[in-house]
Image 1 (spheres, rainbow over the protein chains, first blue to last red):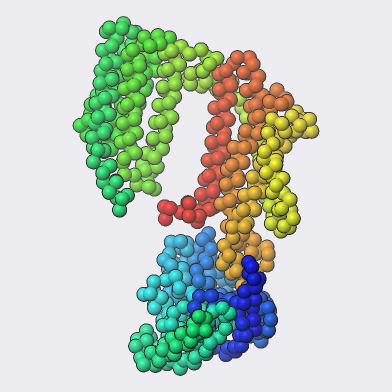
Image 2 (image 1 turned 90 degrees about the vertical axis):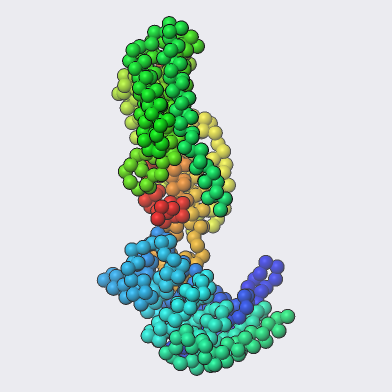
Length: 250
Length: 385
């Protein structure tokens, strides 16, 4: 598929000849320089952008059908919590919109807030929590209606490295326990190598796939795994692929 | 860094200033007590005793600091203000000849200044009752001080009532004309303003809903709004009286014209202020338009809507009062002002102005409270958390 924007003076090709299949239950990361279209690709999956040519199927149906079927939960770069709603009410928002049974709301919100480690913060307002906690709440909000697909657009990009590491570990645990398909966009080589079962390296202008790297990391890994030769090897491959993509660019 | 250091620099003279102000106030009080020996002013004994007490408080204030000084200073200031009232009546019309009176007034002004300064430097606990009361103390003292000075100056210089009545005369007019003023209030505020305000704000909001949905309406209505807001109210009011008659309906119509476009413009700006990620989230949930509006757009637009509601509260009052100048049954605040001015009953005019000012402040204040309750989450309101 391809996606072309009508820019201010000329058409901008955001994505060109993207051809990719993602297996159910995979953790796929997209990595590449700014402007390589990784976010655009994910927004196309989410039916927030529309490919100008080619076809894109999400769970075997069009992105629009998948969206209306509530197939995915989207975690943005910012937590994007509604400031007038308490944390618990923010997590309940998709349940209210999607018409879940009222009796279920409280139970699900409680369960998923516990899953992301936000027990006891239900009654707080978003602006009373730290950035990391807000992002956890937004992950709980994306999970609570149990979509098959989790789309995460640089969810930890705005956080400090210590918080980011901890949330990486927790995300891995979540993925193991829920077996969701995760599509994850990131700038960080370490993050991509640590989290993913498959990494798609992209290059910019026009956005295209440079390389796809499979990562056979042990499922039960902790941050220590980042010291292992296997991790270093994946990171090395990633860096090479990124350099290669960059070479075309210049 | 610069904030901290400037605070530290300011902290040093705070110990000196109240004492200096108190000494100055004490000196003025002493001169005021001694002056009648030379000028033979008829100073009532009660006033002299009051000034003596105020002077003792000022003296005490030089010895202590902090809350004690603030308390002594404001207490002495209240006594001095009370002493000024009989003193001014005794020296009525003496003008600059009433030397003791003016010395005492200057002394009281300095003491009040010093006391308010001392109160404002107290470290207030935000949410306690004393904290709230002390925060109210300064505006109350300031307002009271202005009233006392007004009263004493008008009496002392025997200012003709037609130019400026004293607060006492205005208060007397408020009491003696209470039933008339109440009828005016009912006619102007309860009928014209409230009806026009609700209709105008409601219509502005509904138009904004439509204009948000149909772009041609937005493009057509906004220039019209600029045009209408430039129409002088004295031009439109007589036309409305011709259209809708002398009753409250024509005033409500003027209020509608004045309030509808501010609400339209603000609501549209509020609807457009939706955060893109917040909106994408609703799209990702496959939300219906109505769900997205009620759960996202409307709450997000509330700060803008409240801006228009507050602006319109003052516009509505002005519009209704001015419109009454152009024809009304023999009741209403605008009618009262125009007729009582012609009859030289300026105290009644001032009494009506007081009613209008209090009404406007209360109206605005209630809206501000509602705003704080509803848009508590907005960065401009959540500072305390």
